[in-house]
Amino acid sequence: MSFLDGNYLLSGETAKTIYQQIAGLPILDAHNHADVKRIADNIPFNNPWELFAATDHYVWEIERKCGVAEEFITGKASDQDKWRELCRVFPLFAGNPVYEWVHLDLRFLGVDSILCEAVADETWKKLCKILASEECLPQNLVRRMNIEVMCSTDDPLDELEYHDKAEQAFGKRLIRPTWRPDKAMNIFKPDWNHYIDCLGMATSRNIDFLEHLVETLKYTHDRFAKAGTIASDHGIECPFDGDASEEEVKEIFHKVRIEKEKPTAEEAAKFGSYMLKKFAEMDAEKGWVFQLHIGAVRDVRSSLFNNLGPDSGGDVSDHMIDIVKPLCRFLDKFDDKLKCVLYCLDPGHQADLATVSRAFGAKVKLGSAWWLNDTPIGMERQLEYIGSVDVLSQFAGMVSDSRKLLSYASRFNMFRRVLSNTLGNMVDRGQMPLENAIEIGKIMSYSGPKNFFGF
Image (cartoon, rainbow, N blue to C red; front, side, top):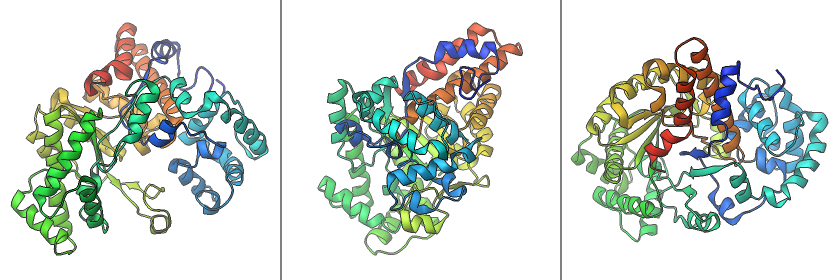
């Protein structure tokens, strides 16, 4: 087997047969961090650093691990010098999925080079020429990747004008907004009051009482629905049970909003619990999918957060978080009323979520192996466990969770190969017939998420 050849991640003929049946299916990406403005305005990529690494904190983290100075990652060095440093250390990335993703992206553009210091300037020139072509404009890249639907991640403050512009460009609502109200829920953040001020100004409302906040967020929820939204997304470190009473949360709101005092950890948890329940009620009413991303312990490295802000590579997982009891209490409140997808950051929680998904029936599904689990090893382990505890065919589907454009193709390619190999091994062990494995592969890759999300 050669590097990234046709046998990549496929260990036998059965796996190859399954992959051939699902490789060309359209991409449905229910969760990503698309730069909708760039796509809508069709802004070209000027150079390979801009396309491959400028927005990707996966790349940044591995570069730091390999000793690259911050000046050549997020600092003031030129893009070409950043590219040279990336190429210099890139051979050290081998074994990490970043190594495979970036090379898959290169192959998509027709470049067969293996990145290293010796080819840095050569690949820079070659890629700059390729990226200057019309076929590499963002909208054409989206078309070439065979993306049928992609769901961006959007704050309730977003006016969604670029989603409308993209709809005009593609002739359909290819990029759907996703309602993500984390900033309204995170009352413990120092800038929470400022955010609520901005929310009030954007909606021409005074938000001085808890009821005002809920009503205002409901207004944005309705506005997103008119723009084609079919899902919300919520990032929480620990699950909430939804048990907090309205009266005690009103007092917490008044303390922080009007008296400008900091909430205690217990108060912040009660406020988050109450708000998340309200969000779920809104989603259940509209038939949206409620996506829960659980377990990211954020911004643990102060130097990164203070200098670069969030999403810069300072987040970790924690297997000690108690997710089962509060999550079950929360889901029980919406039993058979709310479509929900569960994602977890720590691999140790995959087994827990599989049992929770199984217990709560068809409307609660497991999401793809998220973030640090989004690797051949992580995906394979998750898929094997789903097949033995939950039900493979009821999987919510792959999502890219990506912040750079070409990753939609490379990450779905990797997932479909891992899925084909997992199913192929089951066929070869006599666990299911080949025809059934192919059908399950098609369901998991396309028809299942299409039906569940309502694409």
